Length: 616
Figure 1 (cartoon, rainbow, N blue to C red):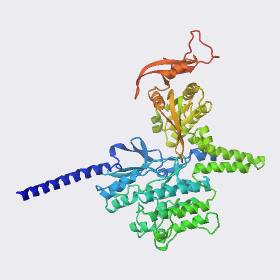
Figure 2 (cartoon, helix red, strand yellow):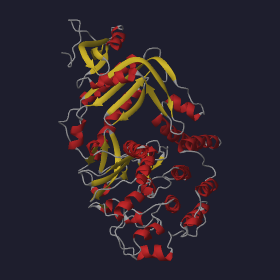
Figure 3 (cartoon, helix red, strand yellow):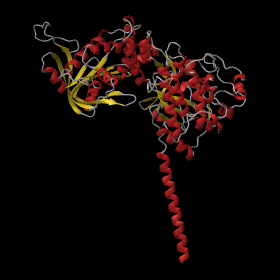
Figure 4 (tube, rainbow, N blue to C red):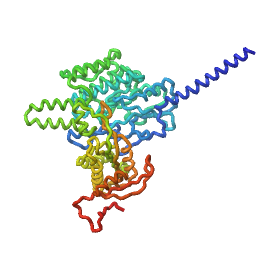
């Protein structure tokens, strides 16, 4: 009897342990599936007006002078993805069979999703195993351009300041990857090195090549129908020979992802550095219309062909020698990241730190040198200072940028009262549908440039532009003794006047309509980020101002009751009480419309009021 009880007890424990481990295991798998992108939250946006070969490429806008071209470069996308509200770049494959995610793959992809670094474009995840029959790899969209395009654009002055900063950014991002559980990049090329709007280089498409190749080998996926736009042959031949050989020892198979490793990444770094120094594609294939025969690939695989390096002596010879070491066919003999960092320090001894630091130092250096030159050189000094400050003023208010230039970081602080305004272009989706991307960008540049002109006439700071929305603040960081609400009121009226008279080139029937909302109240503000500083505003006032804009009809300027009272107290502004409006997060709010500023020198009609076309 006792023996039977023991058997039953042991069996019960075994069943309990099995159930416990099964439930815990399933919960753990669900927890680690944060990298999986559901099909419901993924939307591919295709720009039908963009030439297909322009997809994921950099393009200059219409600005022709060098100073404006430097700051106005943006990429034109043939297509991009939306994950909820986040814009993403993507690589997509056709999925043929269900992809089994092993525990090892699950842990790897979970770790990949957790990576965060200033020099990595965030990995958003992978869409797979659904009825879309695709596997899509997604990462953060970076707007300014690819390093490949900057290298090959001879009009772009890539001096040692840019080269050293971009090289250091690549090594910092790569070192973080190599020390992480992911441990490799695998698809490193100048085309996957992206430059953001703050001129910080971020590497993308890291850590996915082995996963992709596993599924190629298992015949779970194939290249998309238009695979030539996924990996060009000019990029393909720059990958490590040892990994190309694993896929194709004949040099005849179509281009695709190859496997990756730490040593393979170093080989790719050599190719990127060569491209930056020589300003050429390593094997001069970038302009080839058709893929060359297998001879080039066999020369690389079997005869150790390397990119051509001239015998001309330059200060960058030390770095080119390191590039040759990176291409050593014995992966173990390739240099380390620290070796490469030291070579950069030797080659570009006068360039240290990130791009902003270097430009600040460069400006100071120019100032010291140009003071001793003749008056004819004073124009060069002004230009150098203007270029440096233009970059800083793109990201920060003038006073904050000036402090940063002088080595002073202003502490974050609260402001008792400031005014925030949002301006949004109505029916922007109509412009997107009717016009090609180049015209849409030209339209936004034109109208926002006119808004910028208004801001410059007032004591205010343009915080940012996001798509069709324009954000302005007054009273921060320069307190102006309560004038902020009147500054914003004047700007809102001027901006609306611009919209009423604006005509769109090639479409005279288009009527620009904007909705404007502003609110005055307490705000917290400060510089966020040490390496890539931005001046950010926080608090309920920002949210309230945004709600004033989003709840406002077109061609109206809406403000809150507390802000309206500040304007009415001067008897110089004409406002109309709109009434109670339901505002998200605020409930029922009494709102007003601002119609005009009654200047003292204006003649008042006999009735004692000033008429306005928007007044009901």
